[in-house]
Length: 137
Image (tube, rainbow, N blue to C red; front, side):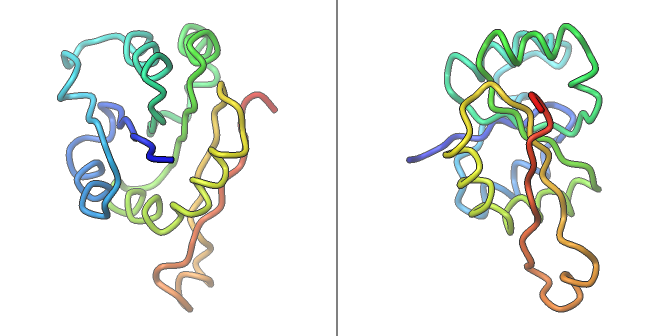
């Protein structure tokens, strides 16, 4: 299945560019929405268009209106925490695990993509990270 990933405005331009250069289909927030567009608006878009949303916002599951929008619109949301270039590289390296996770979990959900351990990265710079369900838990 060909998936399209939607990158939130907090991921800037570099993150989606790295994903695109790795061959992933990516839509950027800035290409579709005004800079001050609401999070609910982009989450509704992702749900309706069946985009895999990606964000850097670790607090989203604690923000009632955003969590409600994820659930109401059936969004598959991935989050990560690192400098953007490192985060994008980890997403690319971990894509087989991400694709498997998305294929086996019914949206709506929020999942966190973790980087490989420093030990694993020292042995293999392209080591895959892990992904785990954050919400609903």
